[in-house]
Amino acid sequence: MKVRIDGVHKSFRKDKHQQLEVLRDVSIQIKDGEFVSLLGPSGCGKSTILNLVAGLDSPSEGSITVDGKQVNGPGTDRVVVFQQGGLFPWMSVVDNVKYGLRLKKISAKEVDERADDVLKMVHLSKFKGHFPNELSGGMQQRVAIARALIMDLKSC
Ligand SMILES: Nc1ncnc2c1ncn2[C@@H]1O[C@H](COP(=O)(O)OP(=O)(O)OP(=O)(O)O)[C@@H](O)[C@H]1O
Ligand SMILES: [Mg+2]
Image (tube, rainbow, N blue to C red; front, side):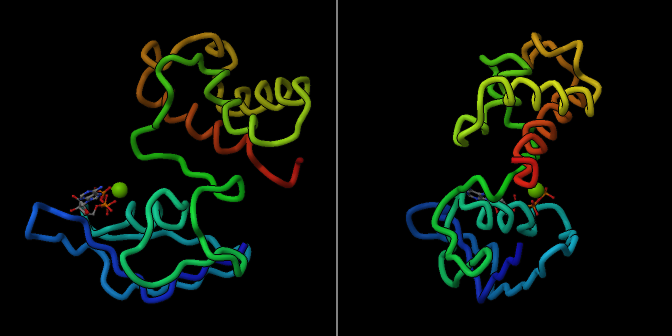
């Protein structure tokens, strides 16, 4: 997957008259298979960049393409492990993990098998019926990771 961020600016509205400029003229090119870390002090805009690439927010200026296609919103080709977990509190662990696969044409049997596999990987098989508020912070973070891993396109 190739990601291209070109001349991106992002500002958030602070109040009626003021804008908070978070990203100014950011350009990044990520090659297929490349592993990239964004480093910087808290509040410098790392999550903002990730949200833009995920299509959860849009740049104030500039463009973002993934494999040559303009990012206009979220898609099953991009997954995010949110900083705060972002689990659905009303869903059990296994239902949280299976959530993204609803958008793909995969049989219920395979969805169940893949959920079992990823839950095993993150050592949470015994907690599949629990709800997020019954888990530790680290366990919740592992559910969020399992929810991203289950989307792995190569095994579809
Ligand atoms: N939706 C929003 N509305 C207004 N301001 C926002 C919004 N999202 C982020 N910000 C502001 O933008 C700046 C960058 O936030 P961001 O979450 O990208 O930081 P970060 O680099 O990921 O920080 P951290 O390392 O603490 O996670 C911060 O000043 C934050 O307050
Ligand atoms: Mg962040």
